[in-house]
Structures are given as C-alpha cells and as structure tokens.
Image 1 (cartoon, rainbow, N blue to C red):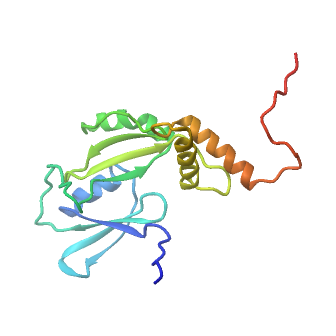
Image 2: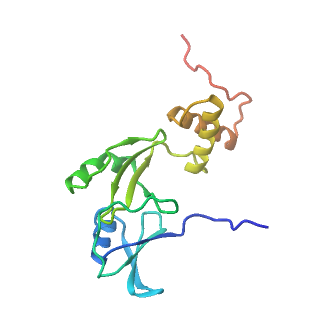
Image 3: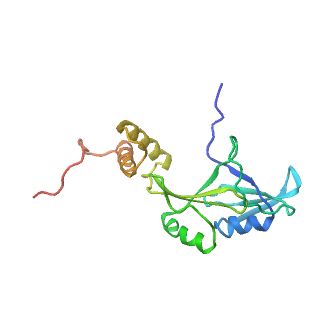
Length: 195
C-alpha cells in the first residue's frame, strides 16, 4: 500500500451567495485578483469564480444569483470548516485593525499565537477568516514548516507549553548550522568583544 502524496493545496472551493458579494469580499476587501470564471460544470445554475490569494494557488467560489448573503456563523460541527487562514505580511498586519475598522468589520483584535499574529473576522456569509502573519522568515532553502517542526522539537525537549520566539530563533540557528557548511571546527557561540 502506498500514500497518495500531496504537494500542496491546489484550491479551496467555497459555496458563495451572489457573484458581486464574492467579488466585493475576496477582491475588494482581501485584494485577491479575480482571475477566471466559468459555469459550475456540475451545476449549470451556478457560476464558478476563481481568485488568486497571492501565491498563485486558487480560492474558488460557487455563486448563484438567487442566494443572499447570510452573516450567521457557518457550522463548526465535526467535518465542517472552522476557518480559512490567509497569510499577510507584517507590514499589512500592522494596518489590519485600522483597515477592518474603517469598513465596519467586527474582528477579534490582534491575537498572539507565539509564532505568528492573528486577527479573526467573518466573511459576509459567516465563514471565519483569519489573517495570519508569521513573526519569522525561514533561512534560505527552508520553509516555515521546517522552522516550526524544529521549533516544536526544541519546545518539547525543554518542556515548554507553546512555541515562543526563543524556540523559533533557536530552530533557525539549528537549521542554518545543519544545512550550511563552515570552515570552522567549532561553531559554538562566543564572545567577539574583548575588554
């Protein structure tokens, strides 16, 4: 038996209301270019809108002009989507509260997640959206997941409750030491300033 090895998220499809609500939210609020549209090939009464969330992958929305937006929270029962998290830069994150407030969008305020900052709010159809911004950049040749895996190992070995910036910094140092050779025999921390 073999795995069906994934290589990333291809797209996420959500059920939307009318076409304009989807365009106004996904492009007009979140800045995702509206890149493609065709009929829903499994339901001729719906349209299928495609948005680029910023990494070339896609978020797609099934729309139907007979559906109206309902802002009530979407179900969070087992098997349901709890929320969709979107990556934003620290520069944009610093403006997120102000930009949500100027549109009158209720939100959670900034949440400290140890390795990232988050803000939560609902889309016009009640789906929880998270704006997430990492507090670190991975070293060259590594991904955010590489750093988090190493930070997790460090955190568990130290018996700490959750990942904090010290675990991230130590994980980045560990990954650099492992992946980038040096002519030095001893790569331990030292004092460079003499008194």
